[in-house]
Length: 278
Image (spheres, rainbow, N blue to C red):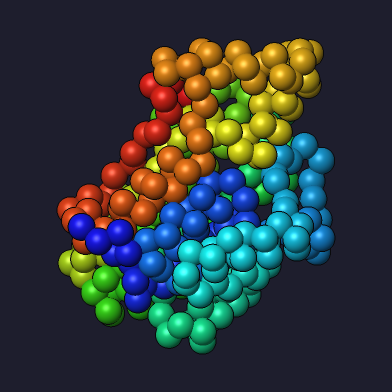
């Protein structure tokens, strides 16, 4: 099987400047796809809500990732993206179409979380998590799916989470949003199936990214009054494989799901957790 099996394909990756999004963008580029990445940047306009946990890279990080993608021998474009804003979503899709003529692959990695119980949960924080994690995927998919169906080829990969099937008292909004992602994934898979457009979700456990470390640190320091380094190490050794998932593992799986040989895999939620439940 060719290692450049995605030559001639065009991919959009949300949350593409960092973490799992960056890893997926690089894996797709290594397989030959031209890639457009978008991320919510640190200087982006719009209000933040006290209590939200989201990793916002800067312009330098966005450009650095774009350069890394280009070094794979493909074309790379990087722009700011807010998946909560329909105009921003339309802009990244139109940028891809204007530059490359189409969108073949969509990898949705943009996400955030909030640590809060249902009891006393502020509406604004609840709505923000659902808007980014679930509605953002819906908005992106709505823009690209018709073209994929028309061309009878497409791959959509959504980052869900083990939280979609395992609850946590202080992650109510996150768990709900990721369960929604798996449900949306199955619906899109059914819609795209007659045209050979696949849609799958990947549910990682703890992944060793900047966002993952910040989230674990927040739990340790604010909820447990513990040192973050000790808590992160505890999570690492508590998994059956005694490790945290690495971003490149998520990237490799995303690239595999884009192979022609993976056409029959659709509507699935694939867990990557080193054997851990959460």
